[in-house]
Every structure is written in structure tokens, then in C-alpha cells.
Picture 1 (cartoon, helix red, strand yellow):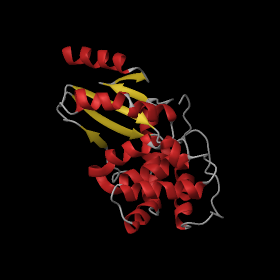
Picture 2: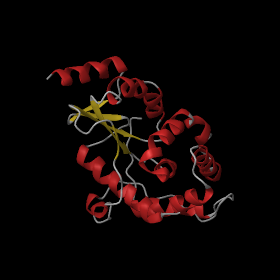
Picture 3: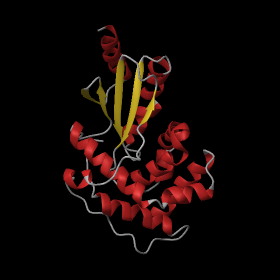
Length: 224
């Protein structure tokens, strides 16, 4: 997805929480969150210390690959269904690559998805992530019905083993929503992220690519 919209942390957190406060009904008080350039100073004022960095593979691996991705980005979904599966089997599971996943929020739906994925903690995050990307077109649908999207995300959470109480607690946590957006804003500003998926391999930034190209880069860095 060749765009990056940075959203106001407070406004997005409010928009995120409001829909979930109105379970199974059409929202009446959800306004669009403010869109514009991120205010890095304002974001840095938000406490993000409780946000967990989601990782896979050995921290001692010679290669560290960080992916910036959005749950609502079609290119990210294709990356996870294709390149990421190969990357995981060949390099992450063999402890040659330390993988770090970082959220990008283009819209409120991506934030909601992240809140559901993180609801099960580190143990369930990547399993839920796999489901969200594999079923992206199903849970987003036309993108016109926020309540349906919210309920679809709840259903994915339930399939992953989360119960109603867990999901509602996670999805009504406006402080966590605000922290996630602020965390994203600071990270995106620091790494100059302008599109998704963006890959940072041992500190060097790359755009989306075929697995053969990704493999060649990793093999080169492993050989250094």
C-alpha cells in the first residue's frame, strides 16, 4: 500500500472505543478521527511502556528483519500469505532471523484488528495475525459497515480461543488504543515509513519484494 496516513492518537482512540461500546448495534456517536501529519512531540507524551513488541525467532540471530504492516493493507496480506510463510519456515524457525512485527494504522479498522490480535498476548498474536491476513477480504467486506467489521473481528478472536469478556475488555481499552497509535507514530517517524509493507533488514530499509529477492538479501547478510 503506497501511502501512509498518520492519525491523531487521541481521536483514533476515541473512534476505536466508541464502536465497541455499542455492541451489535449501529454506532451513533462515532466521528471520523482527525487525519493529518503526526505530531511526534504529542505522541511522545503518551505512555507507551505497556505496548509489547511482537517478535519471533532468536534474539541472537545474525539477521533482524522488522516489518511495518497494516491489517487493512492488501499488499501486507499477500506478503503474509506468501513471502512470510516461506521466511518463517526457512529462516525464523531455524533461528537465523529475528523477526519483529510493527503495526501501521491507516484507519480505525486496522487499529481494531491490532487490539484483537494483541488481546491474546504474545502467545496468540501471530496465530491471530495469520487468520486476519488470510481472511482480510472477508472481515473487511465492503468496508462500509463498521459494526459488521467489529463483529467479524470479534468472531476471529473467538476462533482463536478468546471469550466475550476478554474481547470486550481489550476492545474497550481506550488507553491501550491511544498508546498503540502513539507508539506507531513515533516508530514511523523514526524509521521514515511511507508505505506498507516496509521491511528493515539489519537497519536497512526495503520496500515489498518477491521472496527470491528477500532470500538473496538475507543470505548475503548471513554470509557477512
